[in-house]
Amino acid sequence: MTMHALSELAVALLDGSVRIVDLSVTLDGHTPILQLPEEFGWKQSWPFALEEISRYDERGPAWYWNNIKCGEHTGTHFDAPIHWITGKDHENHATDTLPTDRFVAPAVVVDATSAVQADEDFLLTVDFLKDWEARHGEIPRRSWVLYRTDWSKRETPSEFLNKRTDGHHNPGWDPAAITFLAEERDIIGVGTETVGTDAGQASGQEPMFPCHNLMHGANKCGLASLTNLDQLPPTGAVLIAAPLKIRDGSGSPCRVLALVPRS
Ligand code: MN
Image (tube, rainbow, N blue to C red; front, side, top):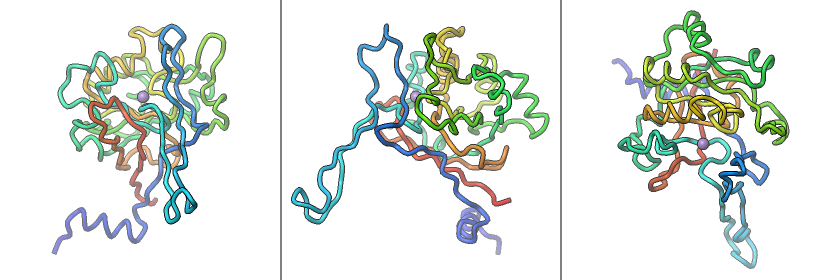
């Protein structure tokens, strides 16, 4: 009798030959969030906040629970195509309507750690991706492309956001690399370790914020503020990343998990 793949997975999870890596950061009041430039910042995204309702006390003798508050794009989070104006007219493009096959999918990891150590404004290019493909094979369609930079290892929110007088500095994408991934590789989307999916200086790129503009324009998704990408193989992981089912939501914090074969 041949086992169904799902039964094999169940066995592998039990015997540890498939392990689960948590790619999510902890949400608390210090979780770094995007700040809008002043000319757009009439209202800023709320930082994560937690208000205790009761904790086995006079407010609620047997139960502990909290109210929570945050912007949709807080901590490790999902960007839906509706997030950007270029994606506004797609069908099923919001957190509640996205097809569920976007939420469980293979992932490849493109390691640009040394390039980013040399240049914190490094922009990932098509040549970089093709060099990766020469070593690991073609990026499969309907997969996530995770952009490893080790940026998540930066210890303080200020080092992570890396804001200077001329704005934020963190790695991002050459626009042609996004077009290549979206059009020629037909991926589900890209995931980054930085606060958003674009470079810190992306407001000055053409087009402005190319990852948001071109990915969501192609009805693709994004994941930001990922961590532990250094624990994933270049190929062979399966990602589980599902946003909260917010009606007409543009994104949501989410717990992102990777299933990884134990080497
Ligand atoms: Mn976002």
